[in-house]
Image 1: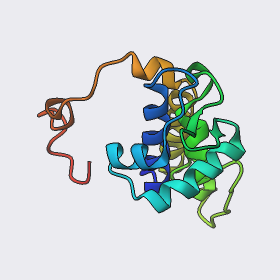
Image 2: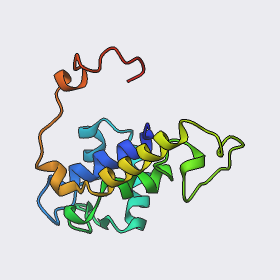
Image 3: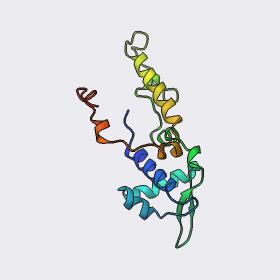
Image 4: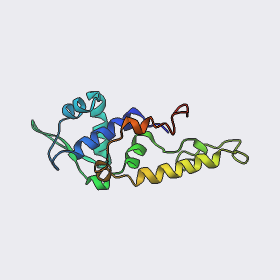
Length: 154
């Protein structure tokens, strides 16, 4: 599974807003510059996040955006689903975007992809912004672990 840039940028913005004083508005310009996100793209993302009820906009010279919900009430799963649509690796194991496949009745690997979907959904829906922020940052030693380095495409 790979999330889109739109989901990535939305997550960066949500985490940025969750890291400031509650209710304090932050300009799109500040969020964009501190998180390496194109400002114009972020403006559209912020409107979508406002429509979803995660952020609110504060008008005026000192305005901007702040979280509309508590960080513990926003999950990575709902953000990715909003911007990417589905969390399924392939269409034949998707509920909302199911795409039939002629090989379903005899597919040997469909079970594994269904289990990946289920695990991914449980993990992402259980991962709220507040809990994630209290965790540790991933190190490159973890990413490039010798245990998995031989797997191409990881």
